[in-house]
View (tube, one colour):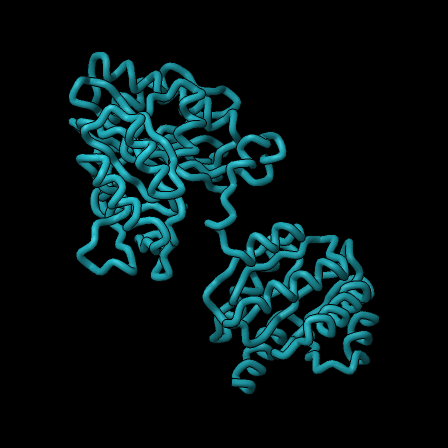
Length: 399
């Protein structure tokens, strides 16, 4: 789960992290009220979407010459003008894709005199089972180019969560940032605070870009992105309450309500599979046969008739879907029960695209008999390769 920048800063402030004063705004009037609470005379108006690259982004409706999603304002009137121009329009960044995201929230903050920009992120390093602290002296809007062109300017410090954050980790961060004196001490303290927040809140990612050195010699978190382990949100109802469903794909939101793991993709063959590994193998074999999957969808090991019906409805809500491949291994849930669910779901949603089903496992023959006797145009497959070939052929035939 992701949250907005202003929400991330509010959470980090509880751990002692220094952030500029700022206030969220849902409309131009709230943006003006927020600016009036700040000392000025420089304000920053920031679009709040779940994507990076906002500063270099462009608004679809405003033309190529329009400003991006992070704007400086030298008066309250400029704050209002920027708010009216940004709200309700679609911001396209390097991370949103061409579709972009509609801006429904703003964050109005105090202006900061910047001497230097840095980069600091904490991530889960699954390979080592540790927390990776990724650090660079080259923070700011061009960090992607730094990673691509000059990776030697990026340092990684790993922390064993069983041992916890130690003083030498803080010194390593400060050394990587090439800070001295009071700034060196401030970096050590900040890195500990960020690690404590990361662990306590079950984060998957915590990115500070930029972390800035101000002209008066302080370290300040100028931007923050946070994402959380969705499986741990039951421990953090306060974090779960920050979820903004308008920033998520509607089908993915609907899938989560039915306890389905669904991710929309760009292809035209819908996939319904039980098990994440099997789902990825199914997507791979579709591509090997010259087509592209329209989604990742894992119904889980205990798929019920209701779950299967919900899965069909979610797959078919994507207008790009031209056919569906169901690939089920009957273990906990027997193949005949799954087959009953598939038949009921196909009738319930008035299925109008080709459907290929591959069943294997417990009661597989009973399951195939149910499909064959359903009276529906369901194509049965013998194995995964056969299923992929058949659904690709069916989609091409229907085109």
